[in-house]
Image (cartoon, helix red, strand yellow):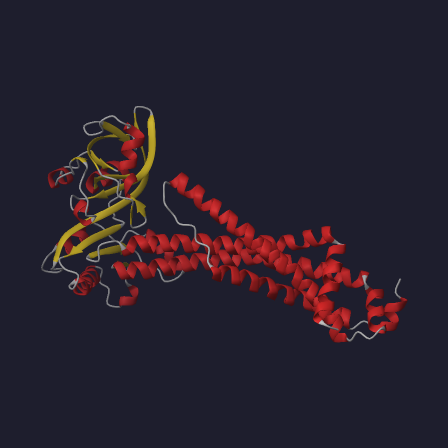
Amino acid sequence: MRFFDLFRIAYRELGRNSLRTIFTILGIVVGIAAVIIVVSLGGGAQKAIIDELSGFSSQTILVGAGKEPKGPSDIFQLLTNTLKEPELKALSDSNRVPNVDIITPAIFQVETAEYKGETERGTMLGANEGIFEIFQTAPAEGRTFSKPEVDNRASVVVIGANIREELFGPSDAVGEYIKINDRLFEVIGVLPPIGNILIFNADEFLTIPYTTVQDYVLGAKNYHRIILHAETVEIVPTVVRDIETTLRELHNISDPSRDDFFVDTQDDAVLRVGTITSIFNSVFLAIASISLLVGGIGIMNIMLVSVTERTREIGILKAIGATHKDILSQFLLEAILITLAGGIMGISVGGLLSYLGVQAFNKIAGQNLDFFFSLQAVLAGITISIITGIIFGLYPAFKASKKDPIEALRYE
């Protein structure tokens, strides 16, 4: 039997039970749509973060608390508190870590700023006066805080452009007081529009002396990061080795595999972001595949019912010369057409939901995440659909091809 004849018969049978066909492919639509959404949003987020890191100073070195994340179980190590005042003092020692011109601890926390009934959520950044030089920015209005203000735990804040716009509008911000975590802070400076720095929107920064954050906001003595700026790009690998040696001596670590800290340069950070996003993408893809499994089982059940309903038809086809291979091919083609139709619909639905999700995220979070929709994801969706049809359609098709023609003709 020619392929065209097989296709015509399969198309006719699916169209004859169109409502059942539509409900059958819903599981495939959901599964493929989920795959497309994960690939699209994950790829877009990874591209955005890597673009930001690529624009970050290549002389900047970040020391992170906890074990270097290399797998899903290591991600929670980032929450440990292995960076404190002794580590900052050791890394600030020019005899231990030379060729560093700026060093600052960094503490991050999402907080709400309030001014005369107006509120705005932003990223509280606790650091010292060197953070502005590292970020290569200066206030558009007012000034930055000084070392004496850091030492004296001053309640001062330099705010980002979005915070200034939302809280103060056209009014002057410098000299006013805003409330953060039930404490009043004097606004001494306003940053110009910057956009994203690392994974944060700098226009929503609430930059405060880290000593103030530790004592009056969080009540914790640890740092999330220690940021260093090497004197030259060429000296960065040497500085990294000095940092690792210093912290291992301080923490009595002889085996590098047992490090309770990690050191990131620009290149390291790009690779690590790729690793972490790939891990999460794999987890979400595994979850999405459950929908495909459920959809595939549904297709197999429906095809088995179809084989039973069309037993007499199978007998007639065999009586007029159809071979086992012809029957097998016909029912297998029907299963593939169902999953392929579901795959195409799932790609369309997934692409649309991804686009709407990106637009909603950008509006709510004030970000500028690009919509990411790759040809590879489309090809993967189609391939997965066809493979699902083959896997779950093979048994019903094989069962149909093995029916005895005489018994099939007698079936009522």
